[in-house]
Amino acid sequence: MDDLHRALDKLECAPELRAVVVYGEGRSFSSGIDLKARQAGELQIDWFRRFDEGVRRLEQLDAITIAKVRGHCMGGGLQVALGCDLRIAAPDASFGLPAVLEALIPGLGVYRLPRFIGLGRARRMVLTGEMVPAEEALRIGLVDWIVPGEQLEDRTESLISELLKGSSVSKTLAKKLVTDSFDSTFEEALTTYLDYQQISIASEEHKQAMQAYRARMK
Image 1 (cartoon, rainbow, N blue to C red):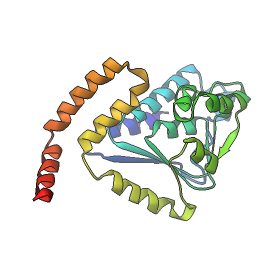
Image 2: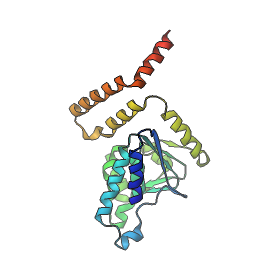
Image 3: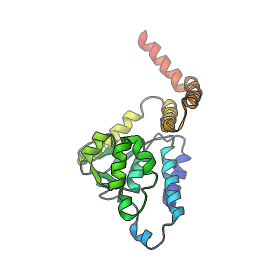
Image 4: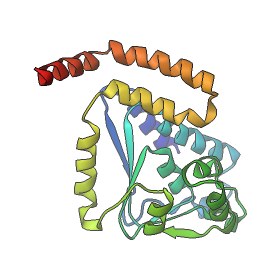
């Protein structure tokens, strides 16, 4: 957990950063909570609080975040993936929140998951602890792309190249609006949008885009 927050400290202090890839070292993205540590009493309620604070910090990064998933993406691992903007997966990926099988609550996965896949399917995943294969995850909106495992690295790199096109200012501000959309009233969203739109209009990137448009028209 300390490593997670230290990494986020560095990412938040890098204003030039445009994209972040989150992935698991080894065969899987993450198998979730360390049950040995939990059984030994090392993970108390403060650990759970700090974990979800970390996922929230990841979710609110200005940079575009991509979860690159192989193998198991379970529990806290799935929560981290849901904290990213986009998810790209290999065919062997599987997703689940099996916390209830260990008499635990799957963190604020109970908050984010319904926003991705709907209330009914989220209830099913949370209450059964079932694992969802990659193709099903794609169908229900849990992941954005599935690519052959040997192409995962190259496809992630090409995706980053596509995402870096266009205005970093407008993408950052639009991301903030989307992230907060479920928690804002229409009036709040409208006020914030207009403030952000004014920033976008005044940005150097917008001026360059308009110059390029004029050149195309000529």
